[in-house]
Length: 635
Image 1 (tube, rainbow, N blue to C red):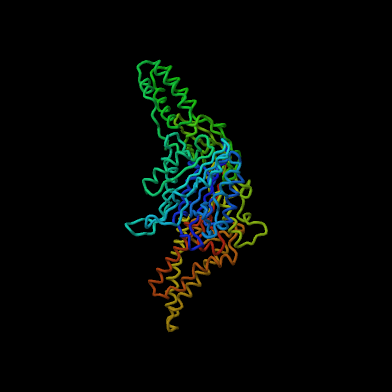
Image 2: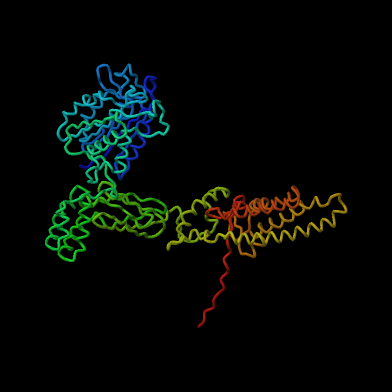
């Protein structure tokens, strides 16, 4: 039976009425149960959680949950909170605004829930009640659901359900809300689910509730496991189960393939498999067929192990029969080749779903992709595949489906294209990177940085991006460091020379001629750097290392504009003015640390490798390609 698997988890731990004690466990119940039920490899439920809702919100949420169901759906309602009884013995579930003295108007009647369960179109409904009462027994405990809860009576109407309609009610008669230490009542500071719900979560998550080892956890199996675990924890709690009209067990969850445990087959089959007679071993292959293709995954796993052994038999008749039977139990997909067509770079494709064909053991598979850009998921006999545009060009990968009977592969192909926004058909100068009508600075820098990300990722692929050839010409930071060291050496010569001249000329005329030294050196360095950038876009060091400062939005053959040259030069030479402010030696250390930080910023700036000077002036530094010498043709 197919259909949606939907779960509604109601958790109430805070109450406006002082007569209802706050609870610790319901919120943790909801978190833990939602995780395990929503896990696609376990419960596969579409989970909704309502926490501390008032009674009207609770009524509406529960009614929507049941009314909107389809015939083939499996519905699971879990309630964690206080349970109360009216003077007449009717059961009420508490909401955040429930008043114990006004249950008819402020409580959620169990009769209301029972009626919705009866009227829903869904054929399978499971209700878990982990509800508590305020009485304490023994001292130091808050109990959840006493033996006189009358839950069964509240839901007796479910017996009217037809034989094809399964209704199951599971309740915890009591659960410890406070940790009991000696004769004291100590609040449990380690927040965890209640005893009852903790056992439910553990049984589903670990697969331990699969008592018959068939790979599925039914409601009856889960109840037997939970009841046993609860009794081990506290003798004061006995869970109860009521089943109305259900045929067979309602499958609650699936055990992970790695958790399925092989179960023994009759000893006569083991003896026949070890028989020296080939005819006896051949008969074992035939006997294993029913177990291999059946619903019991534990038996199917044992059959797989035996058939793998028989496939190595020295009798060709036995080995061929075993191989053929294993091939029948391997997973098969509807399309072994999946072509996703074309997707854009750095985007996910739509999911493609492929049906998994074969017996139940064939669907206990592990899907492993051969490439990182392929995502595979298996759920309810459906294999979902999705690809990511990791690099431009034609990509191909393989997904391997491993089952107990063997492996099956699928081939995946996709064409990754560059979006039109970043595509071009020929090299473009930096000036053409400026959007039409955009301001020269600063919007253009944001545009070029945004557009540069995708092409740089794909630059190593066979399909190049000539439109972003400029990115291939960005000057390496090491070459820029060499250029700056050359400039620093020249500036040092200028500073020493100027200092000596100032000392000779101005010192006799002024009381302290050396005080003007920083100003004069600053002026000379500023004028030299400014003029070189304005005229050529290059300092002396950049000329020698064949790199150039280019203003984004201006032709690369020209120098910088007055504004860009000023914005780039001023932050560079300004520290010279402070060269004697903190003492000569310390000032020089600060200047050099400042220059190193300004330059090395380009080492980590992505994608344009711009220093702080470039960011201030709206520039980038590129290499100058060597001029190609004309080649003479020889006859």
